[in-house]
Amino acid sequence: MALITENTRKEVTDIVYNFFADECEVDIKDLHADTNIIKDIDGDSLMFLELIEIFKKKYTLEIELKTIGKYAVKHPVQTIGQLIDMQMLIIEHENKLLELDQ
Amino acid sequence: MDNIGIIGEGKMGTNLLYYLLDMHFSLTWICSPEADLEKIRKHFRKRLERSLDAGLFDEERFQDILIRVRISSDLNDISTCDLIIETIIEELEAKKNLFRKLDSIANPGCIFTSNSSSIHPSKLIPSEERKKQFAGLHFFYPVALKDIAEIIVTEETSPETLEKIRAFLHSIRRKFLVLREKDSFILNRIFLDFQNEAFLMVQEKKATLHQVDRIVRDRFFPLGVFEFFDSVGLDVMLASVKNYAEQDADRERFLSLIRKLDELVSAGKLGMKTREGFYAEDQPRDPGNPESDDEIAGILRESYFASFRKFCSSSGIPPAEIKTAMDEYFGADTPALS
Image (cartoon, each protein chain N blue to C red):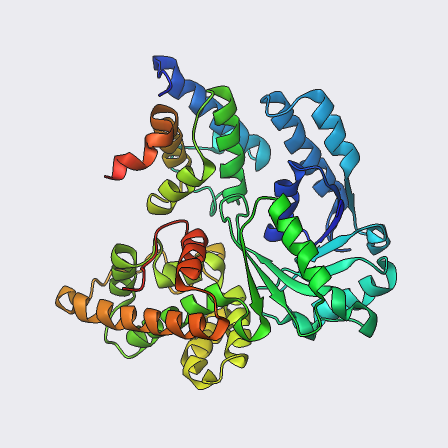
């Protein structure tokens, strides 16, 4: 499991907000935790996959994409806040993510 | 096969391009004449630079990708491709026109495939000369997460063509089912029978929308039937259901569903992308009568397995293989024949 520090959530939040501002060409100030990724900023699941790759690299995570897919199917992400929460779980639990449901 | 052409800048075309980027292929991505090519190129480069900045690959790889990928709206640029994957709008005439144009441009050995999720490849063959090198190649979105594809062979598809497509899928690490046209799009069609049964129960007021979706989520699949419709888009679903119905001997049973989809699409209610479809944002939840949950689940289960058995028997594909494919399709464990 990756080491979570006080700063980790802030790092993740910054990356996610900057990513969506850049990718969806919106002002970062217009993004909030409850911004709906598909309905409000025209995002899609490819963006989610790209973010996962970025976090896998940044935190040297050992987790299969398929594991995240399975988790996401049961816990669909709609908002930026939910996405950050899921990224934190992924960083914390890596390949044991699915055990959270057991 | 090293030179791959992808036609179409929609969700699947874009997704396939990014999926194949990680491999060794030379990629030609043909976008429609209406597309803003400069915007697409700019976005592509921005995304690569972001990946470079994040350390997902190094500068050498970055430059390599820029060399290997050509983004164009000129069909003539596919002339050197070994394999073409068409991913344009799900309309028969649009696809036929495209393949006719491609046929005069592509090299004689080039294999043509269509990613259509509902149109038989034999309807798209542009010429006698190309018929042996034509097949359906149906991926599921997003490709990185859905480790399954359907190869649909026509009566004319040659064994060499099938072998090359198989080899291509092996090389990009995707599992596949090989299907004849009568069993084409088997995963969607098994699920469609289930969706249709669910719809009819709501239509006949045996259950509510919310009740059916809750039961489906709790006992069958990760997503409810009507949530699935709204998420895919009702215009896309309407086109697909019409095509599937045409392929079904008992097509009358889909008429109510087609009428409802038609009605919603005509009213501009396309699902999530217009914020209203079967569901509307301000729609009150109607949980239905929970006491009837078991009965409804029983009917849905029976319908699912009847369809599952029918397609196993027709295609000759073992149930375990179709079950594995369904698991990939849904990204979750699906019900197994008991």
